Image (cartoon, rainbow, N blue to C red; front, side, top):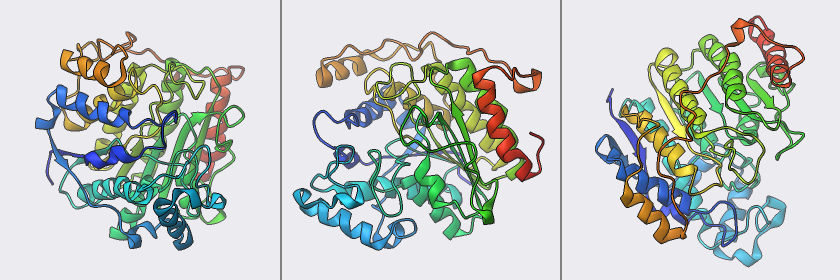
Length: 390
């Protein structure tokens, strides 16, 4: 197995553009790529452009009629069929939508193939993580569900146990739905509570179909959760489940929209805590999955201050050349930001909260605390189904 990481990148993924004023501004991808380059991480990874996912690959998750609807909307955006979630406020149709969505999906599928075949130990597609797309419809800024397609491809290649950990602020509903009946896939999502955020799913009671009880795990966090609570919840649930499941591959989704500056959600997590979870996911892959790790991007709408820094940390961790939180950001990148956006760029790779303090679950919990109640609800719903103590 190659010890080097792969960074999946094709400049054309920046064409995933819902138009002016839409929160998912593709500048976040371009600026992340430039920051990775500014830190010299290109020398530490193999930069690979995979081919777009073909129709047979897309059909591993998506229905044929939906793929046809995406193609039709891509050719004539004005004729988009809204019954498939296309041409809506969240998912406006645009010319070439099918092609660029397939390209992003292809990068995640290529990452999964490289890791499974031993061509890379880790692979990152920060343009991916489009976890809301359903088998038969677009949703939440997502056209094709590249995370589900990557997992489905791993299963097709012979994987018997794949774990998916999603730390985006929104519930990973599309991935959960894709594998709801499949005990070979363990999906774990930590997200803001469905009472206060789209897509209003991800309740702890959602634990998988009868044929796969305990294969879906949902930690629904109260609005306002900050670093200490977020890390406490992650470590109170994820490591024990991963240790029990012992996946052959770990697939993770790192939406940066948990951040306190994100305009679309209500958690209060710092860049430093996001980095800490990225490190934890890397370590879990090495401890339980022979290092096989596919890491994806996701949401994130503070497109200058947060997303590029968060995902550059992710690439660096995967490359084995972690960027220290206190590191100064190269001036060349800050000038690039101003030229593209007329915004002033951050100066360092930290929010000033490193190292992040949190208390371990094993030290005890407070049943009156809202964060601890969320953790308890998740553990009590799933752990007994897996033969674990809640």
